[in-house]
Length: 153
Image (cartoon, rainbow, N blue to C red; front, side, top):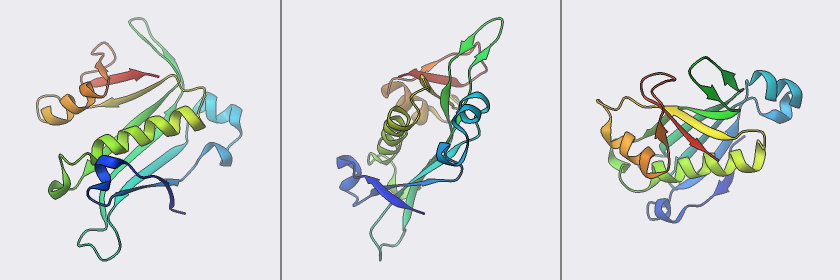
């Protein structure tokens, strides 16, 4: 089920290719249910060519979440990044940025009702990730919960 969708220049220096696997995409659900209740999970992986010491050097998982209205905040339909990982030996080489870009591209092309991308980061224990997300246009919204970041599309 892995299919190639993107070859990012910064990750290409590592010969990394971005791949996609949809576990429960909108094609497998009625669109109304997908937009109303969420439930789709998409995963992307950065890989090295066959024969390399590590095959998968990074991955990202995201899911569609419907809008939320609370007393102190509102959230639009969005893709929420559940996890972003890059192998220690391959950090600071553009892989996380390429994975984030792939989620953004996927969201814009495949889920037109999504108006934002969100994630959670532990700012104190993971300042490098927080800086990366801010560089990519995410902003903190502590009214939602500590470490919550969002980027409007």
